[in-house]
Image (tube, rainbow, N blue to C red):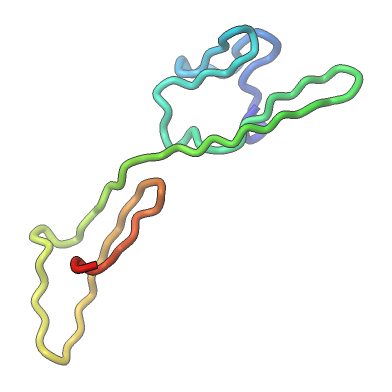
Length: 101
């Protein structure tokens, strides 16, 4: 299960996402992983006592930078101020640093 959503029951797939499948009876396989697949997945065996095994999935994704300025160049007057906006997504997190280091 993931986020209280049951994905499989015994050897049956409950989730209707073709990217998810069972291999070797009880191994969950996720094809074409996306950042939305990140999170904790719980394998639960219920017999006399309930046993859980938690797997944490982290999805690495290349950065995507969204610039508000097409050219990437700004002009400012001496003593004035300038705002550099950088909206970026990706994992690991994107860092903003000066060009010279």
